[in-house]
Image 1 (cartoon, helix red, strand yellow):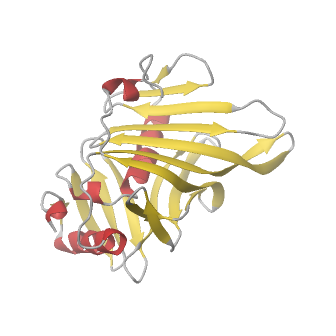
Image 2 (cartoon, helix red, strand yellow; image 1 turned 180 degrees about the vertical axis):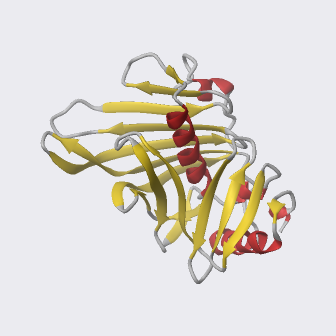
Length: 239
């Protein structure tokens, strides 16, 4: 499988990645250099004194190996729509909330947390893990780690018995709780094509075992032309 030729790491880990890619895409996996995916679902949020599920729209954009952006919109009933953006251009982490100007985030707990969660999301698509900037290491018969050597962050991937990807996880700082927790993305066993790309039907995120959000892929564009301004939150590049 040519997509694995550039990956660093041990043979067992490469074999697990190869099997996971075949379980998702078959014998002709897509070469993904950039990606734009939209998802719709719901997230847990506190509304007054209670926690409830509220509607959520997500858009994630990647320009591998290290530029990543995450846009979200939540629509609580009876409350104004809330929008946010987290973006990493390969060197600087920026965050924007509502209509405020973007902030450059320098708190290393927040920077590393955002990088690790975005890298975990990128790992869901599997084929970017076969590139030269990734180092793979075998952990057991059904799991391996994938380290992005350019941002020095690693995530663990766990496979099902049929070798389909089941979960990606990483330990990172939770801005809501103020402590390090296990952040995991769990994939449904069911998968299907979205705009020609085979994807899991549902992606569910957790902090430890507490639900964070769940969403279904609604649109995907493989290898779009993404300008630098998309990841630096330059004016006019937010759409």
